[in-house]
Length: 182
Image 1 (tube, rainbow, N blue to C red):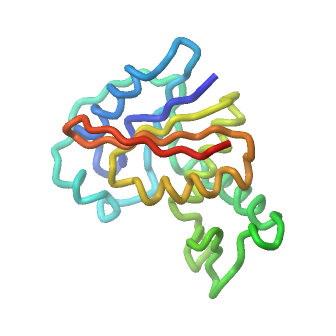
Image 2: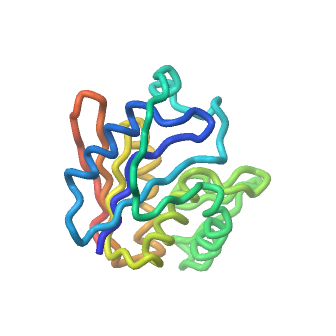
């Protein structure tokens, strides 16, 4: 079984055209054996919403996902993921610098120790695996590319045989894909 995640939006803003387009793409890609997931960011404020999304009006959006996960629900799992990264071999493990945890050359936490988005995304990926997924596809707006590339560097460290693909899109329907090579 695979889990396809799409329709992501910030609760502080509400769904926009980005959510609808992503959900439609997921519906076209989903096979009968796949499950759908909606991940809703209930942690961040309007200040954190991408400018490409913040300027758009909210829209009615009534998906019927197999799984709905709130970002706040993966905070504890993010700390578990951090512990997994700390336990890796010396060259691969997470390291503490000036109060911030880093791995693969980028930060995972704030100086106060709170998980940042890429670590929360890794936690969500671990949760997808626990839900029975053998592979996952994250279907996200193009402005999440940098964060998803970082995620693709972390996933093989904690889930070495897990297949993760990221499909990025714009509002004109242009798609690009990036994936790990598990």
